[in-house]
Structure formats: structure tokens, C-alpha cells
Amino acid sequence: MKPILRRILFVLIIFVVAALILFYVMREKPVSAVVQVVDSGRVEATVSNTRSGTVKACRRARLAPAIGGQIDELSVREGNRVDEGQVLLVLWNEDLEAEVKLAESEGATSRAKADEACLLAEEAQRDADRLVELRKQDLVSEADFDQAVTKASALRANCEAAWASVRMSAARLLFARARLDRTILRAPFAGTVAEVNGELGEFVTPSPTGIATLPVVDLIDTSCLYVSAPIDEVDATAIRTGMEARITLDAFPKTNFKGVVRRIAPYVLELEKQARTVEVETVFEDLPGNNELLSGYSADVEIILDVRNDVLRIPTEAVLEGGRVLVCRADGLIEERTIETGLSNWQLTEVVSGLESGELVITSVDREGIRPGARARPEFVSR
Image (tube, rainbow, N blue to C red):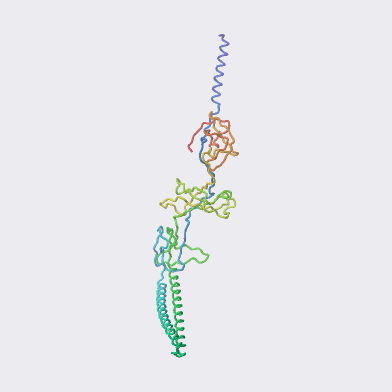
């Protein structure tokens, strides 16, 4: 080979090697992209509360005696379990107990007098009946007959008056017992004593009309709890009573509780002009047996509007505006597609068309370098 040809060949080889090195150095490096596999499963359409809800008891009574007085007996403390009808406290009531005993004595006296009056009336009536036969035979004077009949009628009236007195004494006894009962505070239902505002010897008074005061005993029925949560007015239109729901509590971060919607408020709350909400009440279906749930816990509610099983689904975070998704092909190239979606929630979205099972969709859509036409290095995460 001539020297000139060898030089030309050597220069070409150097040029090709340099070009290859430059291409390798300058080529675009694959960007790391978080992907998830398109699979089949359950997708739910749900709505959630806009602000934290609150766990409340289905029954809660803030109790106080019907009248004022001094606490003479206090049989419960905070945290005690009580039965329906159990006495919680008693005000000093010896004067009223004396009135009850007096009314009972008066009642007994009235009944005895009534028995006496009626026995006399019966005797006078028998005498009058005998004189009727004797009068027919003209064996007694008309004056004696009239006197006997009048006496029988008068004693019969005395009997009726005596029994009227008995009924009046019974009413007086009921009144005295009612006054006495107003000094005794009983549990209207079985529950847990949440708060006691009073001690032995202290004076308590009932709340004046229209003025709220601290209850002497705050009683809560923890056997039935529900969550009251605000739902955005737009979402609330789709909610119906009886719908299933999931309840989560900050106090139990790893537990989901089943619930059912029992009430939807018939009005809209305007706490903020840009955040109008409807209060929705969801009852717990599976309360724990150890009664660890407390009234007042903060809670979130996710109400299930619709469910579809065995449908294609992808993470909702992978769906861009206009129903677009970024797909990582087998060769690493990022491709943009438009899909048709079905049910959706904050976690999963149903894919009606545009994707196939097993394809990879990119969820890290905001990461720098993620764009159609770029090359990606997939990072798999478990769902």
C-alpha cells in the first residue's frame, strides 16, 4: 500500500473513533423514572371530608339535678361504668323525705276513715231496706221510714267523700315523691361517666333557661359511636344514606374501620365563603371489643360511591391533564398516550382504553427530564 493511502486510512480511523467517543459522551443519559405495572383489580369512586371529622357518641347526656341543693351523696367518679337507672348523686332531701312520710301517714288515715264511713253507710242501707218491707205492711211510721232512708243516703255520701279524700291523699303523696325524686340524679342510659363537676357538700344549681352551665355529670354511651365530618357541597350531592365508608383515626393510624352513612345534614354550612360543606354522619360497624375508641377523637371518612372489580387500573398520580399518561416502553423510550378513564379516587383510576395489562406507566411525572421521547431507567415500586 502506498504511503499516501496508509495516511488517509489512518486519519479516517482516528476520525471514526473520535466520532464514536464524542457520540458516547454527548448522548442523552437515561433518566430515572418511577413506574408501576398496569394490572387488574378493584377500583372505587370515593369522596372524603374536607376537614377533620370528630368521633361522637350516639347518646350523650350532660346531666344536672332538676332543682338546686347541696350534694349529700356522690356515688360515681370519672371513668365509671353505670347502668340505666343507677343513682349518680343525691341532694340533701331530709325535709322532702319527711313530707313523703307525712303524706303516706295521711293516706293511711284517710283510707281507714273511708272504710269506717262506708261500713256505716252499708249498715244504714241494710236498715233502710228492712224498713221498706215493714212500711209496705204499715208496721212503721212514715216518719221513721223517711228518717232511715235519709240517714242511709247521708252515710253513702260520707263514704264517697271519704274515698275522695283518699284519692286526694294519694295525689298529695305522688306530689311529695315527685319533689323528692327531683333531688336524685339517675343515669338515663347505660354508659361511661366522662366528667363530674361537683363534690360532697358543694351546692349545685340547674342551668337557667337559655344559659349553658357545666353539667354536674357528663354521661356518654360508648356502645354506639359515629363520625360527623364535613363533605364539600359538590361531593355531597352524590352521597346517600346506607353507603359504605372507611373511617381512619389519627389515634389508630394502621387501622381502617368499617362504617355506614346514617345521616346527611339537610343544610350547607358556610364556615368559610370558599369552603361550603355538608355534615355527614357515619356510624361505626365494627367497634373494637375493648372499647378503646373515645368520643372526641379526630377522624377522616372515605365514602364509597361506586365499585368495579377486575378492571384495568393505574395510580391516579400517573394521570395528567386531559387523560394523558407517560408510558415507558420495553426499549426505555418514553411515550405519551391519551387514555379513557372510568372510576377514580385519590389512589387508583380505572382504565377503559388506551393501555394494556403489563405495560409500565410513569408515576414520577414531575421529575426533571421526564418527557415524551426521552429514555428512562425504570424504578419499580410496590403498590
